[in-house]
Structures are given as structure tokens and as C-alpha cells.
Image (cartoon, rainbow, N blue to C red; front, top):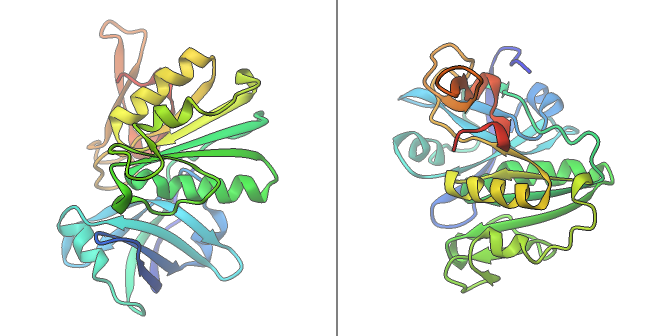
Length: 256
């Protein structure tokens, strides 16, 4: 899946979900209409060099709006969090390859950190299609909990909200009747995705992970977002481009 062109997009909504994370809505009918869960956009951070990648969190096709979540961690995300509604910025998208849900009766969505944003898009898409979906999300503590619904399995590391422990503790509470017909999709920190991958393998389930690498061009040219995947060559692995060949990979192919 390749992007069509660079767009000039207008910020139409902005909401802070907690002290360091905001939810932004941009007017761009093409992206809103064509994006699929797991894809991302590269958005200009104003005067900060290089665009920043963000997983698409939701789309409103009727009104031509797509949404992203921004956690402030550096100059680029700080600049974007200060955007005011009405302003326009440059954007490439939708980029990358999304999740393939085809052939599965049940889907488990697992997210942590900013991974909850693409998981939200997947949840909205699957439920709209009438699919059976279970969501398990993990956070450090209650102050970090965002985009959570009462139906979700919630975990926190310190136990001040939901189940105490990592997302694995949450996944262990889910009754999986037919593992071979259940797909698990995971987005979040590398240690979490590795743990979920091992958990899924033990259960006999396929697991797709969306890798969140540092990126520059977003189009597979600069080669700065490589991911090691298994290969039959002498080294046992090869480097592929997260932005172009991913960001979604079969977890069993990733060299963790």
C-alpha cells in the first residue's frame, strides 16, 4: 500500500487525553477514505526537521477526517501538540501495510503506550464489520489510561487500575475456544510485543505486530527504520524497511 501524494491537511479538533497526550483530528478526505488499520501518516512538525510518523487512530469517512494520538516525548511531538485548530500542515499518507484480518472468526487486539491508537482504529473497523473482537490494553498506571472502554481487559503495572501486571496477565483471563481461528494483533513497546508473540505461539495462535521504529522519509528510501526478520541466509536474518515492508509483520518472522 503506497501513499498517493503529499497533502496539506487542516487541524479541525484537538483534545488532551491526559497531561502529555493529545488527540488530533485532521481534515483530509482522501486519507480518511482509504486508510486501513495499521497504516500510519507522516506529519510535518512545523519548523522541526523531518516529519513524524503516527499510527492512524480513527477515521470519519463521512466528514473526511482522520485522527492521530500524540504523546509528547521530544521536540517534534511537542511542536505538534501545540498545533492550534484551523492551521494547516503537510502530511504523507496513508503509509505502510495494515493488518490482514481475513480468514479469522475472532480477533484479539492488544495495545500498550501509543499503540492504543492504531488498536482503536482496528477495533472500530472490526466492530463495524460485525466481527468478534476482544481488546486487552496495558498501562503503567491509572494516569496513563486513555481510549479505554468498559468492555476492554485493562491492566496496569502497579495495579491501581484494572488487573495488576502486564498485558499478559490480562490475556491470561481471556477464554479462547478456537486458537487456530483466532488472530491476535499487537501494537506497543518492543518488550510487550515480544511477550505477546511468545504467548500467542504457546497458544497456537497467529500474531501480527506493528513495529514502531524511528522513521524519516516514511517511503522506504532512507533506510533508517530497518527491522530484522528471519532469513535463510548465512546470518540468519535480513533487514527490511519498517515503513515500506511493514509496519505490520508476522511476529514469528521478527528477530526479537
